[in-house]
Length: 344
Image 1 (cartoon, one colour):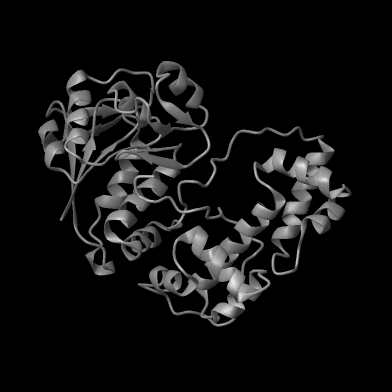
Image 2 (spheres, rainbow, N blue to C red):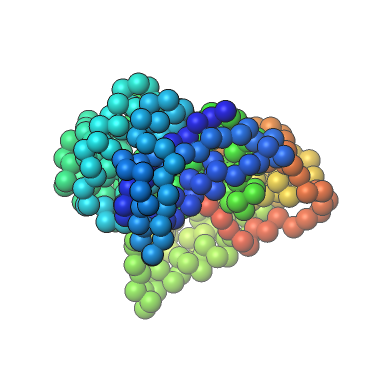
């Protein structure tokens, strides 16, 4: 039994609470997921008011944190709102006992207020990163990753990245198959790892011809990932020199054309492994890789599993595979960057 404690207090975000409850609060033993004991731990036993007119009933006190296997801290709707000292003390005590503590989104402000993030890496929603750094200058704030870990303290970026972190914590404690089963039941991807960049706010004027050209190139490339594309080809589509194209592309997307192509090819391969029974060499070919060996190396480095092991984990409770199902290359979804090792 894995004991998970949610630290609840007035003003916590309902979305964060719902994510935590969905991951650890549902009985999925029929899908091969171990049972969890999820408790809502609060300073007081009375009802707690949440934004949006909701009310939450705690079922344990803060002393339950000491015996938990994991403590999860939802964000406050107002990140700058203070947290009562007994709550902060309970978090410090849990961490001192070696209990992993994870904060979702602006929950990083609560860990920072407790002094737990001093001198440690942390992340929050990209729009709140400057505020976190200004209020807590001793925290090593990053604004790119989806989630990071430092000395048993986990922090995540905004909104949906909380799902990614929760699934990652399940994967670390109970394995890829358990995380994949939960992800499938939630209809979300099981392998968006921490180094995947947040989607930063880079507004582009509608009349910006360069931005429009780059967007058209990306759309065209997504439909032709199975072809031998390179930077020179993409640049020609945009009517630019390769050097100028690479510079504009990086400014618009935050990554290089080569890395962007590789990420989306890996994602196309992931969908093929999940949804078809094509042999691995055919998956590699349809995803645009020049050889099966190259595909295996890149896929393993990004996902942390080889193609066959990933297919086995992702289809632990499978729907019948359909031979010849299309690759769905024209329907992009987030890429899978380098896996984050536990405690790194």
